[in-house]
Amino acid sequence: MSLDKNDFLHLCRLSRLAPDPSVQEEMAAQCSRILAYMDKLAEVDTTGVEPLYSPVIHESAFRDDVAVRRADRADILAGAPATDGAFFIVPRIVEGK
Amino acid sequence: MPELFELSLLEAQKLIRQGDLDAESLVASCLGRINATEPEIGALLARRDEEALEQARAMDKARPADLSDKPLWGIPVTVKDALTLKGMPTTAASKILEGFMPPYDAMVVQKLKDAGAIILAKNNMDEFAMGSTTEHSAWKKTANPWDVSRVPGGSSGGSAASVAACQCFASLGSDTGGSIRQPASLCGCVGIKPTYGRVSRYGLLAYASSFDQVGPLARTVEDTALMLQVIAGHDERDSTSSPVAVPDYAAAMTAQSDLSGLTLGLPREFFGHEGLDKGVADACEKAVEAARSLGAKVVEVSLPHTEYAIASYYILAAAEASSNLARYDGVRYGHRTASPRNLEDMYTSSRTEGFGPEVQRRILLGSYVLSAGYYDAYYRKAAQVRRLIRQDYLDALEKCDMLLAPVSPVPAWQMGHMSEDPLQMYFMDIFTLSLNLAGLPGLSIPVGMSEGLPVGMQLMGRAFDEGRLFLAGDKLTRALGTHNLRAPL
Image (cartoon, rainbow over the protein chains, first blue to last red):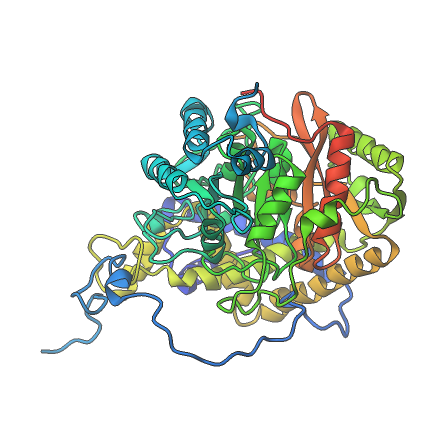
């Protein structure tokens, strides 16, 4: 699989990444080479094989859903880039008064 | 008389329990060693020298008479920067988390503290554990204590280098595709990737959640077993952690004095691999001979889908990474771009500025294999191959008690030698990552040297059979004279 420029920019958009134009061509080529290698999997006959998404072998452990306070609001907000003391602050997303 | 920092963890524990050694002396010895070695190896990120000394003094004053439920009382350890430690910078070696102070301890960190351990520092690593050399840290490179022009392996390279250089008695790393076993092998120490679910991942910054597992590194198998004893067990905050009871590993290790009655399987696809270095192969051959001399039966087994492991792993791990790392958006913690034009620009610019090239590459690949039109061909296909790979292991482990195989195809290589070509770097994980696909445990032990550099082998077992891996690893390293290796730094 080879990624053309539009494919690569689409992937960047999906990933919320914007690599510098000077490195885009190289990154796209690297990704293409890696994906070309991944095509090796087509050699394997997987007819009727159930996908394995997790190696967990135990049943889900059920427990009561108990509300506990694990952290204070101030501790959580302390790590945020911008807050008003009560909420995370982000750039405005709704235009208006 | 060796320096205090040269003791094994169990030797230090014994002296402390006898009252012949205090925590302050032990911490001071390790801090002295850190100051002497850190300029050369760069294994550490955030340090807490003064706090650790104060903690040790306070512990010496309040020392309980009975230390039986405090197995790590006064023992200096380090932890990988992928694990949260309350009030201490935790970045996973990424600029996106620069300055982040987590408001909680990882479960394994809490367990270390409960056992009486003194945490000295966070270890350098490849950014978000994506790499095999610790060259992909946003902060600095770590050098191998056996030859400082070479890499320590990765991604837990800071942990392995720190242990090998005797900066601490043990360290916690994490292993997603070999990230504990491979640096342990390259640095001549011991490391275990436990069975998936053996150890809680609560507080481990996620890379690929169905692969990630926390585990210890130390200089002896016994020390590694004690560390796993401390951190293993169910945690209701990680539903993938297992309710299976944790056995007594020390008892398992002394269950017999040799390896009689055990059958070890040699996977022919590993030993016949074209990239296997002659020096590594020779050291492995001697270890196999030692196993035979100890009474083990050795048989050849096959893992027929080995050649598809790299493709399966990198598709699935990239997919999980692209999803896990979506949380780094500049809203709640970590880096935010200086003057965003709007919300989307804030996400995109913060992430682009914060993530290094390898992390960006894996996010892009993950987005690709999960996107409409490619999901079945890549993601689902890779998960089907994952099941076949696990079945290979289960079939092989029907014919033997555990597998014995090389960890890294080559000993530690020169810094800068491989980092330009990502695919070439992925190939170095050929012997380690299939075990993560299968979710089974693997213990890396030093078995010899090749041209002055340590060579490791891994013992891979059935689910939750860590005890027998420790038994075999302990007997083998003692027979080979690789028990408690220390880098000549």
